[in-house]
Image 1 (cartoon, rainbow, N blue to C red):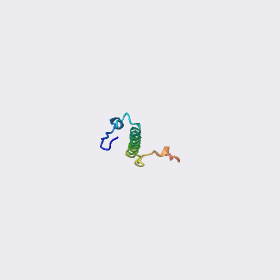
Image 2: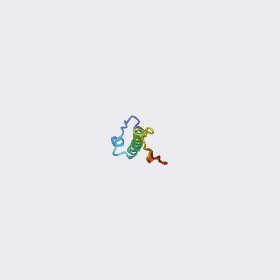
Image 3: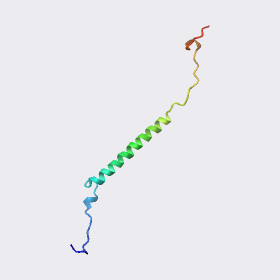
Length: 70
């Protein structure tokens, strides 16, 4: 080969469907991002619907553990 000969990259090397190494890395990081987004979204949903405390409920005296009858 001559030194002044131009070398062009093969366009199929950059194709997503042909180069399984680059596509598998992309799919791996896409999976990691999707799982992380799903977990964080689930945690945020649980945080929004968390139990916010004990409400004051009127309990009749006759239904308590030690009932008081009149």
